[in-house]
Amino acid sequence: MSLKISPSILSADFGHLADSVSAVEDGGADLIHVDVMDGRFVPNLTIGIPIVQALKRIARVPLDVHLMIVEPEQHIEAFANAGAAMLSVHFEASPQLSDALKTIKRLGLKAGVALNPSTPPTVLAPFSDLLDYVLVMSVNPGFSGQKFIPESSAKVQAVRAILDETGSPAAIEIDGGIQAGNAAEVVEAGADILVAASAIFNSQNPTVATRRLREAALSVSPN
Image (cartoon, one colour):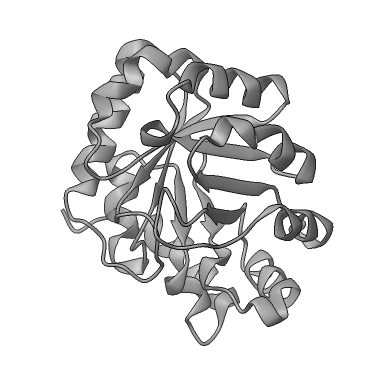
């Protein structure tokens, strides 16, 4: 698939959310990434259904919703109804992962599994036929602005190898510490969707930052 940029509103100005979303869309954003945290699976507490509903009304591109919550299967339908186009659940949080993925797909959404940094890619094999994408966390989930874990590029490669071995066409998304300096590296490793929060929304011009992230991702690595 072609490279997609998915700015995460975790670092956006929520007092001017519509303007923030419009700015990254003007910069060529393909998706809007929405980090949902419950204060239990991760320490932070963030966005819920009302924000997703509001985003659906204002966004011109699909909503890429990442559930960092316990018992995600209980909330899938609500997020689908709120306007999510993509929905990822954590392997570590869903004891009924197959059922959760089947529900997401039945509701017409793209289904993804998110993996924490310590979770090995081998866990994906039993679910590969249900996956539209895999979300590789390149920081420990919960807070924006963390530094990229260097081993994440190798993990992307390992995920790609497993998907290829199982014949899965699933895309690979990467989230955490992504910025212009490492974008080409993770794309070369096999990432298809880049999520960036602080690198875009903490910049002086999110429109320009979105555009530059894509340019950096598609640049030729010196290696």
